[in-house]
Image 1: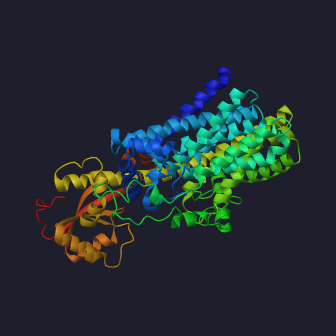
Image 2: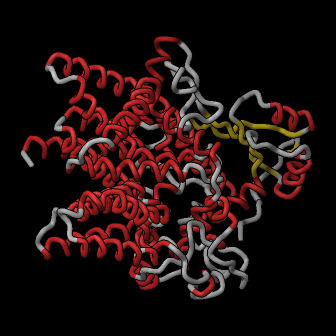
Image 3: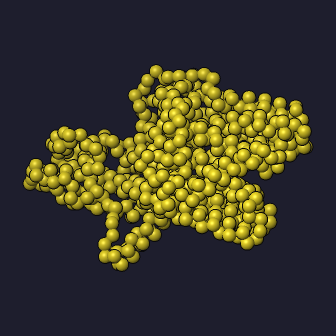
Length: 579
């Protein structure tokens, strides 16, 4: 690798690291029940040695969603890392965000090198990194509990596994020592990827499909014994994929002890490995496949919408008008051309990535809701690689002259830049809303806890008591409250003497109803979504202040909290403490 390329790869790493750091470092974990009931509980239910043992054990206890949320048995390597972070940093998300920033930096550098290797274009390498970073649905990667999934490292391990297998099956490693080391790298990368995230159970099947497709062409260079050897290892990998015994036989105890934070009622009834959610995941629905791939109702149809107004919920919607047309037409042309021509070494990389992409698209047919856009991330990695592999092929076929090639690259640059800019716009709005809401709710409930009980909440105490706090002291205006919500609020006031009313507007109909019933409503706190710590929020706040000076008025995203009391106002000092 030349110094020039090494510097560009380092620049891509820095871009990826700063992108995540500026966007996320400083946001707290939100009140997502899974984070406490599954992640925190799971790390405390097992010891370090238990998690190491489960990581080293090749067998799998479940398919994708273990019964009763016992995810620590399915993703032990992930929980091992989380256990270290929770023990050292308690409820702080900064270690997770910095780890994600480092992971995205590495993935960006890998992306650049792979695209450059295949296209010999520094421009295409950078465009691939920028385009991948811009996808709006990727904001789900870091919100709430998803930042503890270590998805960027999972993607890196998957790329290492698949590209190493290409070279093994192609016969590139002639020396037995190099071949053995490469086989070890291939196995370990798949092993760790599966132990980090069970979705990577598809990797052995991708390798098997690739080996079957190319075996006739590789036999002259690869001995039949080595082909059989690789196929045998893939067969052995099924132990990593298919549960061989029920989850009940894996657990150290029937359920989690009652004093574990966030635990549920102890139960000896642990179902078999295939849970109802697994059955939904294994379902195959053509409608879901087509919607996740091309268009989800409620968005902008990507093949006719030049200007997008709704944030994208499908793979093609994330590409936008220009890139969606170019990607699908170009991919169809290149695949037919590859099938009818002789393979080159680089064609094998294209083929395994294409198989990977097709398997992921098949997974889009699962029965889970199509509005859960985090599943799209699995398609972005191979999708972006295929986009630029295809771009390079089309350039070599139709734009061989320097002038025409310059024009073609200029058009690709403009299309990617247009898509990335509009994507970043959606990404920022989603982050400002959901990340800002996440930060604001933590701050507001911390203030309520502090005022009500006269002390700061301890580590995780706010999360452990959130449901209790909400049921005792709070009315949330933007919830879909039942018709008898007023009676519930009155009941809270009779018990606690004072409650807190959360609203997004100063003209709330429910607040007026409380006042008309004979309660006082005093504005107590006002929170701005853009007061969150990450740098992107500070930049957005500065832009908003500049717009205000120019326009005189700008839209704000705020939460207002009112203290609701009886008339006349009573002394709220003597309130009961939480147990």
